[in-house]
Image (cartoon, rainbow, N blue to C red; front, top):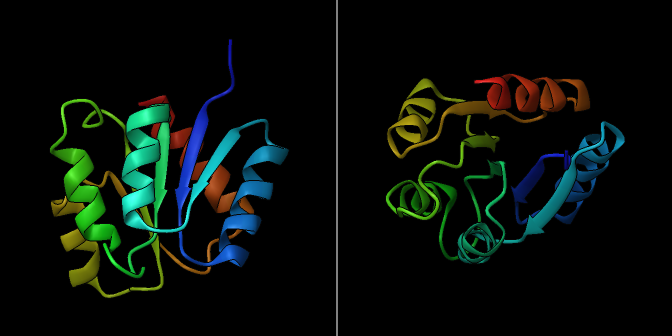
Length: 123
């Protein structure tokens, strides 16, 4: 069995690095995109098992990218978890309305990240 592939979409190289290291330590394969457009392209190409999506990014934001993926027949079944500094309840509700299945507010610990992958992929 191949290990699940997690696509991380975040414009912060530091966040990408920390998240990738945390997931790889637990045996997950990872891919990274620096913005929403690249995230959509990689999701369509790679069909990851899960996507962690930042919200605030240049160009296409995470809400727009999530909505695009949720409405695309080739990617609509990939669970998307928003991982963002936007911590208001209205932000969380909006993210879930765009098609995300989960919402985490930064900073997120490596343990929280891994637990979220395990819980999301168990469904």
